Structure formats: C-alpha cells, structure tokens
Image (cartoon, rainbow over all chains, first blue to last red):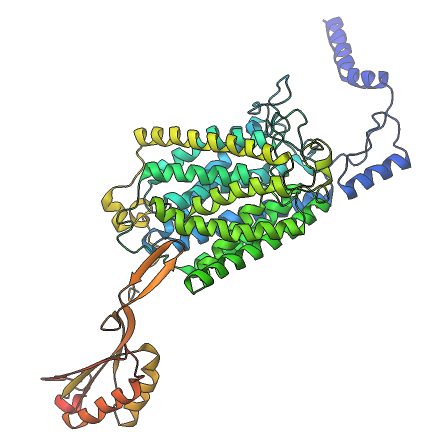
Length: 490
Length: 112
C-alpha cells in the first residue's frame, strides 16, 4: 500500500513537472533586439505589420491603444446611426400613429441581429471558407458563439485592433443594414413578419454577401484577396449595406403592397424636426462607418473622413438647390435626403478616392437619387414609403459604379498591390468592369433572396397587419403604446 | 347681449386683443382652429409626393358683450385684423339669451 502511494506521488510529480521539462527542451526565445522593438513601434504608428522575425517574440502582441480607441469610438458611432439616428430619420417621416412602430422595428432589429451575430453571424462572415481554391461564398462556423474571438488582434483584419472590437464594429453594420429596409415597408408590415424576415434575410443575403466582399477569402474582395475571381472594391459597404438593403426593400415593398389609401390620402411626414435631427445623427455616426472602415486611425481613415465630409455636404446642397430650381423651394427634406444620399454614394468610395472624386460623387449623389425619388417612383407607382429604394438602392449602385471610375492610387496605396492591373488612374480603368460584376452579384442575391424569403414569411406568419390595424395605426395595435397623446389630454 | 365670433389670421391675435382691450372688453376665449374659405389650402411636397392641405390654421376669438359695445368691437376687430389679402377671416355676430358668472351667480350683462 505504501509502495502504491509512493508510485502515485511520483507520477503526479512528473505530470506537474512535465510542461516545465518540455519547455526546457525547446530553444529559448531570443530577447528582441532594440531594432526589432523599434520596428514594432513604428509598425504601430504606421499601422503596418509587426517585425516578422520569428526567432524572438514581440513585446507588443496586443492591440495598439490609438487604433483600438478609434475603433471602439467608431463602433459606438455606427450604432448611433441606427439608435437613434435612423430611427428618428424614419420616425419623423411616418404619420404620427406609426412613429413608435418604426422605433420598435429599429430596436427589435438591434437585439435580434446581435443574437444572430453572436451565434453564427460573425463566423459566417469573417472566418475563412477554408477552400483550397482560395475564395469562398461563406465562412465556416469556427468562430460561432464568438469562440476564440478575444481582445488580441487578428492580423487578417486589423493588426492593431482587438478581434472582439472588430467583431462588434462589424456587428453595427449588420444591425443598420436590415434596419434600412424598414423605410420601404413602414406603416403596414406586421412586427412578427419583420422579425422572421430579418432573421432569414441575414442568413441568406447579408452574411454571404458580407463574406464575399469583406471576408479574408471573399469572392469579391479585390483589395484583400489576390485569388478573388471578382476584383471589386467596397470600402465601407456600398454593395453589402446599401445596394443589398435598397434592392431588397423594393422587392419586399412590391410583394407587401401599397399602404391603404396610397395616392388618394395625404401621407405627409408627421415631424420634419425629428427627421432633421435623425439626419444629423446619421451624418455624424457615418464618420465611424466610413473612416472607421480603415480599421485603424491611419492615413486611409483620414482620407475617408475628408471625402465623406465633402461628398455629403455637396450632395445635401445640390439636392436642395435642384429643388430650388425645379420647384421654387428648397425643402428641409431635400437637404436631409441629399445628405443621406451623399453618405450612401461615398460609402464604397470613401477610402479609395481623392477630394476631386468626392466632390464629383457629391454632385451625382445630389442629382440622381433626387430624380429617382421624384420621377421614377411616380412613374411606376410602387409604395416605397420612405424612399429606401430611391436613396439606398439607387445611391448604393451609383456609388459602387463611381468607385470603379474614381478610385485612385494616390488615395490608397493598397490599390497598387493586388489591384495593380485594375486601377490605372483613369475613368475607364478595368476596375469599372469588376465593379459591374460585383453589382450584378449583389443585385441577383438581394432580389432572388428577398423574393423567396418574402413568400416564405407571407405563407407562414403573413406580411401585413389587418386593414383595421393599419388605419388606426401600428403603435397602439402592435405595441400597446402611443407616441403622442391627444391635444388637451392631461 | 351679443356674441362675436371672429376667425382671424393667427399673427393678428396680439393686435386684435390689444384693440379690444382699449375699448374696454375685459375677457375673451381664444381657440386654435383649422378651416378654409375662399383662400383654399396650400400644396406641400415631400420628395416625390405632393399633398394639398385644405385646412389652414386660424385663430377663433369669442367674446360676449353688451349690445351697445357691438359696433365698436366689430370695428376694432375688422380694422386690426385686416391685411387686405385673401384669408383675413370673418366676423359672426349672434344674440345671447343669458349669461351667469359662476362665482357670484350674477346674471345678464353684469356677468359678462
């Protein structure tokens, strides 16, 4: 018996010591030289890669505080675009009996998409597809439940930014994209139908599309993936966010049908002040969206900050001046719509164009979506209640195309790596055709995906509220609350 | 006793109130109302959608006065509320049978 205890004790001791013994077997890592440590610090300042010498271990393996701080601030800014920016922008444009339904839809989407993102979304979008050919449609599930996504950086997406911050930053994009669709179907779609639609839409349309454009081995990730079959570029989400939501919004609003009394009863915005406040918040939040998409506080982010400002201010002014000339009055909604259109169109381009390109984009963004909202909508008579199609689909498509024409090596040094053959600093450079291919893929996925999902939702929970609920307002019937109490009521 | 109901342009309320005060009218009831007459409504445009708004905001003043003050009061209202443009409003006069001051229970002219 005593012998047995002795042997057991010996075994335990060996077990405890064994890692130490094994460590002693390996060659000791050399101390980093002063030169190598300086290289690491320079890499942090320039947002470059750490000194690649594998014989010594870097002393700055974690996130860089400056870049990380900017990305946390940017994440909060992008959330601010939805809550309350977009919620107020849309909320002000509906009739007073439906203001809360819009807020509920934005809040509901924020929670729902966060859960999906944690479960599978982040992994499906940003993990590599693991295919031998070097490109894929969708990531694997290795990062499901955000497993292994910690505060250490992932060099594939941002060498100086915590992986979990990056995951949260990208989640804010995933939240605002389906929230944009709400604009087209406002005032008549069931809340339950919206939740089911958004769940399916994220899985079938958004996650694959975001992976193709931004995933490390994405099929259309021209800048990051040398093996991508489509060499397209999309800095902050012209195709992923705006084209996908805008075209899906058109299909969904066609299947859903017009609001009761559309074209016969007046349906003016109930509060243009809320709408303007929301627009201002969208504009401010969009700096996180666009400049933040550099995933660092670096030279590219600085350029994106400038181009975003120029394009937005120009588009806002041009839209309102176009109204001034054609109709005699520049409207608040015109200034607001122009600003949002400018932000949408510059989104894919902001990190790739110069100041000149940004101003040209601003002018186009002020005129073309204006024309779409004014003429095309009345020509076809569809009820895109808050002009998600006119602004986001038209603007997103225009932006993806103009990015192809106006991307310049001077604005972004990364263009001269994988895209050397496509970016020739001329208006009809080969990149334009790659952008057209990306537009076609996005359009096909959004239209076909939404068409199928909408009919599935229609057959299961149904799409529309009853006529009675629609005429009395969604707020009270669907949410049991009123946005405003009647005059004279205490 | 007579009741005057005057529909006027909202921005004229202060002037009308002061003019009535000057001739010794001591109280009035004011309501924000909407309506239309010959002025009709206006058009509002929100992006591609054009709406005709039929009802325009106006102010309704109600005063009840002794018979001998009527002409003076109507003249004060008409003179101050007039801009000469369409939409200046209207004045309606009717007879009141009885009035009671709730606090003192005074009746008739003494109550107004």
